[in-house]
Image 1 (cartoon, rainbow, N blue to C red):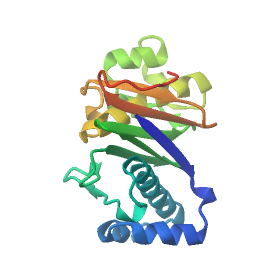
Image 2 (cartoon, rainbow, N blue to C red; image 1 turned 120 degrees about the vertical axis):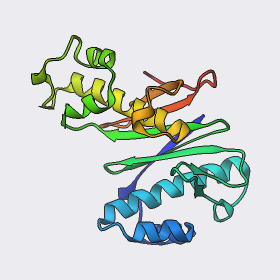
Image 3 (tube, one colour; image 1 turned 90 degrees about the vertical axis):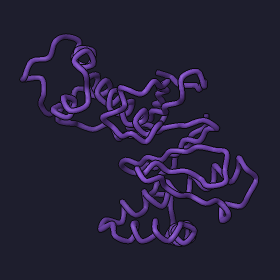
Length: 204
């Protein structure tokens, strides 16, 4: 399993145009509908990472890499033996590539309302999040660094595991997966989900 990241603030207008026009027509139309420039750049940067990584692994020019999406939205590269997954948050886009199914998620660490945890977490996961049985008062906006680290581990793990099969966030806890956490980008947490037994290196 390999993954890489890109800071959209590094992307020049010339680079943006080059990679934008490399995208499939349907994806270009979708990107053009985004109102915010940052959303457009994140999407183009993620697509660029996938093309670069598949290009390097398969020995073909990035212009020849084809990207598509299954009916449920899970991306794939027609004609390639590789699987890939994309995510973006804040100023970052990330891509994970493997020869077996892979899922990736990146989140900018920021204050959040912990009501979101109720929607995605099982009761035992909430106990691990708070270190005890939670009370209604616990589900509020927080900026506590340790609590945020545990929350974003939970969130990115669910997202990455859901992308592994294309089943989505709420299915993340039901899909057997190995979760690999990476914290080397200041202010962000990355989680890569791989098939059980496929290996991978992480710091979590």
